[in-house]
Length: 169
Image 1 (tube, helix red, strand yellow):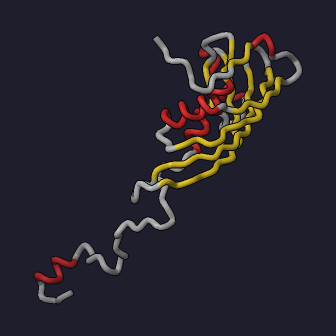
Image 2: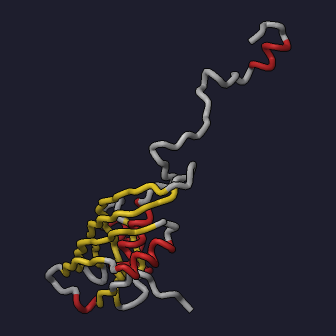
Image 3: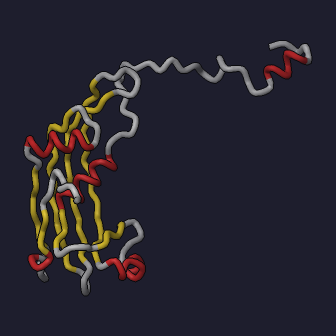
């Protein structure tokens, strides 16, 4: 049994014709709370995106999206709230799993390939996944002190050898 995505916005492939399919999506309060739990955030105050799906040759679909988010993470040092924002653009290429190899050469290498397993592309889940990749992995409060020492305070790798040889340090 699979769990439904928190920010699901499926677009049926039959809706993507010769003209690009464009849509603006915004996560509501319940979706933001569920995404915050999923990504270990204190809060997700805003997540919105502008998405464009373009039918390429055959069964290939190109997704271009731009999202903006405002969120609060926990500082890795002090555990205090650290507010953050993110605005990113991304592209994904969708197609049947068996065409992944040939599709990779047909489009820029920087565009990831996603296999199509249904008759729809979930643009909300794509945005949620890309948002999670844009989150700072080690958020720090500006006031956080790590207690780290500078390199001049740390003895070098040969300090013990120097002491044994009587050259001090």
